[in-house]
Each structure stands twice: as structure tokens, then as C-alpha cells.
Length: 97
Image (cartoon, rainbow, N blue to C red):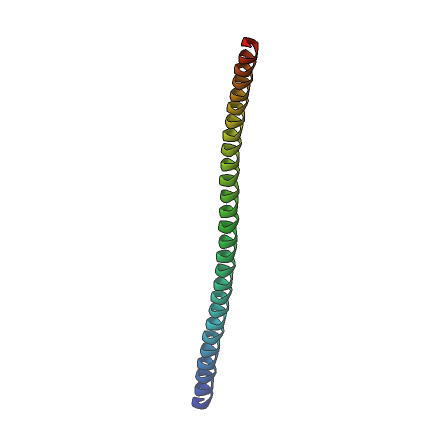
């Protein structure tokens, strides 16, 4: 009987150790999956930030382009006014002759 009791205690102890090892392995695998998922999320966030930065640069470039277009239109309008003024001045000088 004592031998059976020791055998049962030994089996119980081995089973506890086995369960403990299994639990540790499960926790380790879960932690590894969590770390992998975190890295994936970090990479996705970096890609998203990069896309947002590119979108911001495109938007800024478009705004600068619109500003330059407005400036060009103003210069063109001024040039047309100067040309019309010069034509009128020249025609007045021709009429005086």
C-alpha cells in the first residue's frame, strides 16, 4: 500500500509538472502571437503614417500650384493692361502727327 501511495504521489507530481509545462508553453505561444500581431500593427501604422505624409505633401504641392496659378493670372492680367495702355499711348502719338 505504501508503494501504491508513493506511486500515486509520483504520478500526481509528474502530472502537475506536465500541466505546468503545458501552461507555460501555451503562455509562451500566446505571447509570441501577441508580439507578432503587435509588429504587424506597428508596420501597418507606419505604412498608414507614410501614406498620410505623402497625401499631405501632395495637398501642399497642389495648394502651392494653385497659388502660383493665381499669381501667373495676375501677372498675365497686368501684362495685358500694360500692353493695352501702351497700344493706346502709341495710337495717340500717331494721331498727333
